[in-house]
Amino acid sequence: MFDPQLFVSTLLTLFVILDPPGLLPVFLGLTRGMSIEARRASARNAAVVAFGIISTFAVFGRFILAYLHITIEALQVSGGLLLLLVAMQLLTGSGENEALESGTNIAIVPLGIPLLAGPGSIVAMMLAVEAAQGSLWGYVTVGAALVAAMVLVWVFLRFAGGIRRVLRESGTVLLTRIAGMLLAAIAVQMLADGVLTFLRQI
Image (tube, rainbow, N blue to C red):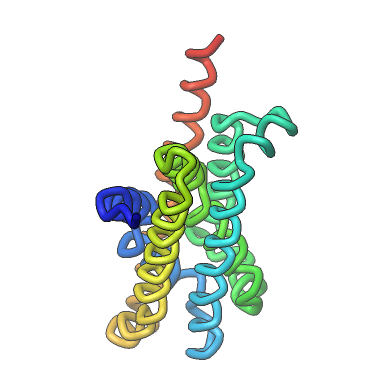
């Protein structure tokens, strides 16, 4: 039967890792030059992309990583490097116009991956699938938790425009720079975690 405890624990874990409220400043910064329609499309596409990637790794993750000889630490380091590049663009404003013209690209990188579908959320889903213990209802429960988490992400990003209207252009620019600084810190932490975990295994 449907396992409420597994559902709640998986949903809460994903929500904390995905951190939709914390993603709002980054989302507003990346979509500053977009129209309302393009911003909403980016929110929807980011949630869909993240759902597709996380669900794929939930089912085939261990096989994919084993076949390619990739460790979770390698994912952390590569994701950290990618986020660091995006953070530098947010801080300096370089490439801003080019990046903001394409909502599809932003929805894929960095929103879909690695901000949403990053090492943390991927590993959390892989562990949740293991916790289902081969039960069909367990898999359904974990899948429902992932869908619920992505819906919550979409809701937060979908209504980020209201925050932008309150902040106006000057406030959004300020928030963009702050988001860049925070994103740089997240990137450095991901890099450090990946490197330290790798060194411990040597």
